[in-house]
Picture 1 (spheres, rainbow, N blue to C red):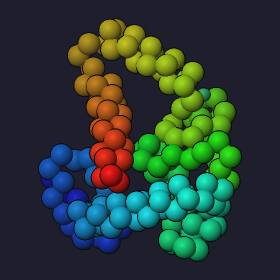
Picture 2 (picture 1 turned 120 degrees about the vertical axis):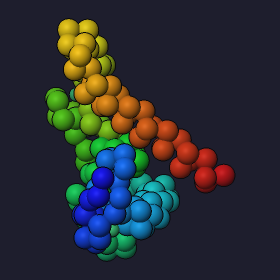
Picture 3 (picture 1 turned 60 degrees about the vertical axis):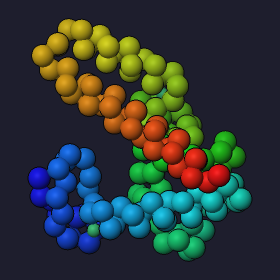
Picture 4 (picture 1 turned 90 degrees about the vertical axis):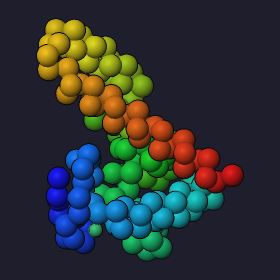
Amino acid sequence: MFKQCKTCNKVFDDYLNMYESCPDCRKKEEELLREVKDYLWEHPGATEAKLEELFGTNHKQIIKWLREGRLEITPDSKIKLTCKRCGSMILKGMYCDDCASKINTDLKNAENSFKPESHITSMVIDKKHKAKMRFVSNDDEKK
Ligand SMILES: [Zn+2]
Ligand SMILES: [Zn+2]
């Protein structure tokens, strides 16, 4: 299906219907993410303001990467991320471990009770799985 890129407004073919940006913008984003990751690795106490100054990343962008699990912060980081369910501090993703396991159980229960609609829950699981794989492959590239 054809979509308009959220970043540059170019129309692109997103046949899997899973992206918001065109391949060019996604590539740029990957490069930016790698730079930010490297910087945070060396400067764990960096603030969002510092990142914005150096890389032009805004709060929304940083949070998006963290929520997607593509970026991870350290416990002493100045950047704060909270669990969407209980509000406790987390280092990446949407939820803390406790909530994540509770939600997983809920998902499984939901899957069992609404079998025909289970494509919705399996899509969520699929996305999570993909995000994790991308994270692993990013690390591999560093070697
Ligand atoms: Zn674009
Ligand atoms: Zn939580």
